[in-house]
Image: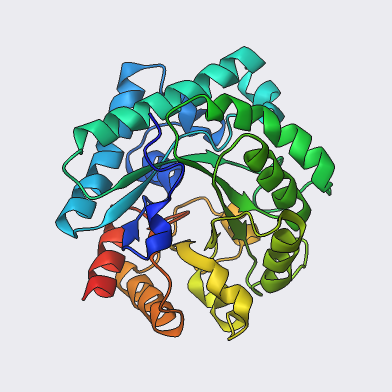
Length: 311
């Protein structure tokens, strides 16, 4: 059953961790292929499930050691109809993938029941590339599109959904409206470029304000992800919109998205340096309380981040 759908503990200010760059870690560090970069494709086979269990157990163990709560993500980022042809999947296949992914993380929560609160979070990816949007997506079109996946998730034990690596404020508006229609709390995390702006060129602050205005501030909180702290730290000013940001899931690499797309090897950056940059942002924005990683990061990075912030 959903434990926190009516009251997300992230909003109390408790210290929360998430995992890191699941796909890049599993592919590059563990040598396991992920078909079409879609982590849910690992779930049907026992070997794939074991890889995912081992991956998340590391982070859940860290959370227990650090006396931290945990935002436990599902493997549903690409489990929606935009990717059906690439995945050779039917709508029924994708619905089942969403349900299986939530059942999987629910079992993990049961395994770590002695931890502080573990929130089951369903990832919803954008309709298209998370680095470079292929076309503009209008808010009403996005609402209709994302409602399908939201309806699948609403019937599970999930506590919340996250619109992760979204590149357009209009698409985020549609996703938020879809979540609200299905009674799901939602977090929105935008992808930004090296200039701190969305790939569309929209400033981060304008995107957050646009979503809040269009949805009566339904979003529980915002995060920034899939970018290095040096790409956006200087756009986080003293305006009120910055207080809507509660979390960070940064790339380990300082490279641009275009450079990462062309890279043949994983750039895992410097975990200690990254942790220091997270710490600096918490001094600037003391209300930040949800911390994890994105592309190129792994358990090492989140461990260093947790230790630095807790210290």
